[in-house]
Image (cartoon, rainbow, N blue to C red; front, side):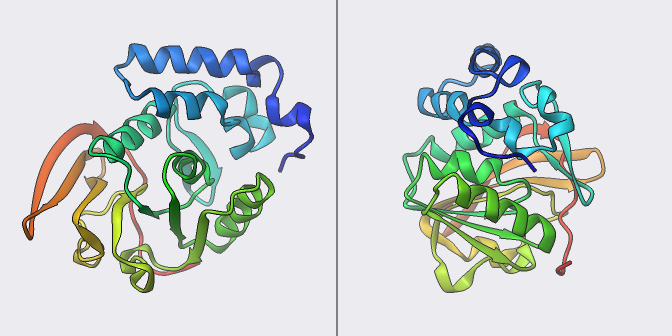
Length: 223
C-alpha cells in the first residue's frame, strides 16, 4: 500500500487535485447535483484506495480491482449512491455492507455523523481499517462478519447501503432501519441488476428502481 506523506496524499500528475477537479466536473455533467458530495469527492484522495500500479487510473470513470474478486466502484456510482442516501436529509448513522477498499466509507464519514461498515473478507477489512485510521477517521466503526446479518447491536440505522448485489434484499437489513430509514442496494444476478431504493414509510417498505448497475454478487459467510 501507499505511504501517507503529504505529497502522496495530495497526489501529482494523474493523481493530483487538478485530476480530482476534472472528475468532479465530469460528475456534474453526468447529473450529480449535491455540492457537498462533489466537494468531498474532490477532496478525498481516491488513488490511495487502490494498488499503486492502478493509482493513475483512480479518477477515471471506471470500476477498479482491489483484490479478492472485489472492485472499487466507478466515481459516478459512488456519487450517485451517496447523493440518493442524503436526498431526504442527513441520516444520524449509516450502515455500509461491504467495506471493500474503504473509499465509500471515507466519503460517507465526511457527510454523516457515524458510519458502521461490515466486510466479510478479513484481509480487505484489515487493509481498509488501517488506511482509514491513518487518515484520522474516528467516526467509522468496523466489523468483520457476513453482511447479511447487518449489525443488530448498533441498529437502528438512518440509512443502509450495500456495495454488493444480493438476489433479494435480506429482511434482516430492512428490519435494522429506523422508522423513516432508507436502504439502497444493487439487486439482481449477473448483468441484470437494478439500483433499488427502499424507504420505510408508516411501517411499510416502499421500493423504487433507479438505475441499471453492475456490482459483484453479495456472498454469505466470512473469509
